[in-house]
Length: 203
Image (tube, rainbow, N blue to C red; front, side, top):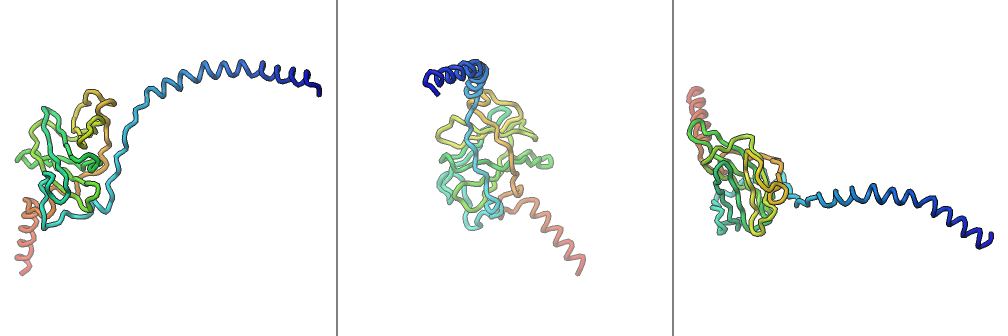
């Protein structure tokens, strides 16, 4: 085949493919660029391990979560009108708190929090009196811009700056129990009383 014939064949192929290339660039590229601009990268929280949720807090030490206890974590609750924040430092230790509301049977509502800190082989359950109208079912949001704390927002309404400052975190688990481990609660006292009454009736 002569060189001039080969050149003619290549030219015809390029001419045939050109409309397809133009159509691809004009129809696909703007959409792809739009999708790329609308994507928000959200750090994925590490799910708590099953073994960690089953391990009880040691009875010998009660961690006040003031940064000086066995966990080395400073965790606290902040009330803001109809919302609540849970803050924990140093950052990166709390992937997600387990949460539920204890209605208290008329004695006042209490937020029950189960902390599962990275590097700690056991759970820590704490209670915080509710001072606002927060109620179930509420949603949980993580602060994407806080560089010092693991910052979570509890709210019945969608927060401002959703997607830029706040990202919703699915509530994947609830506290294993309503009171801290080894705490003599009203529930345990009631169970003990019922057990004693049962034993006395069988004697």
